[in-house]
Image (cartoon, rainbow, N blue to C red; front, side):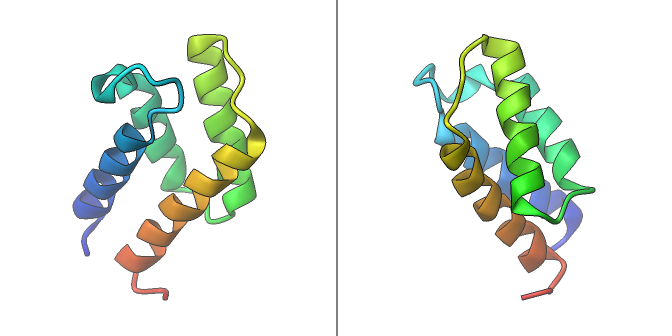
Amino acid sequence: MENVEMNQKSVHMLAAWDPFNLGVNSYDTETADVVAALQGIDDPTELAKVIQTVYEHSFEQWIPFENCVTIAYKLIAIKFEAKCII
């Protein structure tokens, strides 16, 4: 899997996540920020902190950290699959 495909899968996963039930196309900026952070982060806990911060900053709503960790693990799995680490 190439980096572009990894990014596309990550964007699709984040869009489907919809933590505030606003609809699929409501998180374009946040998705871009999280996918950019994913490029340099391999630790799910660290990525979860970024996810929580990005979404909280944009929507002024808090997402439980456990929810962020869950999506972070899924994103890291996509990244590792793309790099053939698993």
